[in-house]
Image (spheres, rainbow, N blue to C red):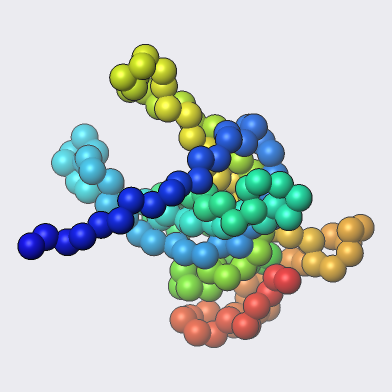
Length: 172
């Protein structure tokens, strides 16, 4: 006999408008291979970031949203992975050779900027699927409304940067 499944109820969320900002906790970072290759036939990899939204006054509290970055980790100013890690950790990442363990990122609270994506393939009724995703990440402020975000250099926090050498939590 096969596996028995029970049909579950589902929560259908409304689309959050583009550029709305929510507090969120990063709950998972995983590396995944995309189902296609580049022009040379090489596999394409991405980091998938899973966030849970905080919306105490609204219907989106506890809602999961995902964002993704490339896997290249460099000091180039346009490197999304580095920029997101910088915002999630609340510190500058400007020292080549710094080693980032993705476990350093999970559990941190950030602000996420919401994006809206429209699918390219029409559904049976002719409409196009519209979904939300995390398009950017911003650090939270430390303790008071008027206080600037806390920033330190990676050289100050991690003089011997490596796995397990980071503080317990840097963000509230």
